[in-house]
Amino acid sequence: ITSIETGQSVVVRINDRGPFHSDRLIDVSYTAALKLGLGPFLAATLALAFATLVTGALHEDGLADVADGFGGGATPARRLEIMRDSRNGTFGVLAIALTVLIKVACLAQFSGSTGFAVLIAAHALSRAVIAYPLLAFSPVRPDGLGVQAGKPTDNDVWLAIGLGVAIALLLLLGKGFFVAILAPAAAVAASVFAARWIAQRIGGYTGDTLGAVQQKTETVFLVVAALFIPH
Image (cartoon, rainbow, N blue to C red; front, side):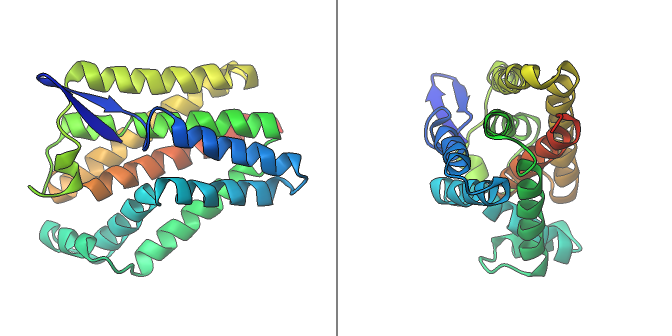
């Protein structure tokens, strides 16, 4: 997620390197792997591996740090201290491993065209909702990535989230109206819950917690899609 200063407001862009640039590359890699006959499980694994290369594992790193901090810290100060440690602990490694396994298991159930649509939807929405904690809470540290993201306006945030929801809904409409509504709704609810749960325990947000919210949202979206899209 990046922020662009425009006068008094901050426009939130919901991608790592331009609007949906990395998402397109990742999703195309998934479809290409299936076309090569590699099978859904291997195709899903390669797509997620490619995602880490394109994005620099930015969000996954945040997830690992948050898992370590909240798993090993009893106070807000201690959690933040652990999160700043560049070394990954048991909680962080398990969080990444389990999240990747869940994502691969979900994606492996889809055909090429369905997996392509679900991946784009999951990537777009999970990045859009990062705008919510930027608006609702304050950065914990004065010098972290959370501060660098800027403070968006109400309109910027709801525009970003609305765009992410609209993209996800439109992409899933062909897979069933129920799942097209349920998957984005569940993912947004999960992101709000995660952001609030984190803020209550450290007093706001950091760059790491934004990444953790993105990962949780994406995972919930994929699980709901896998459960309700006919195979």
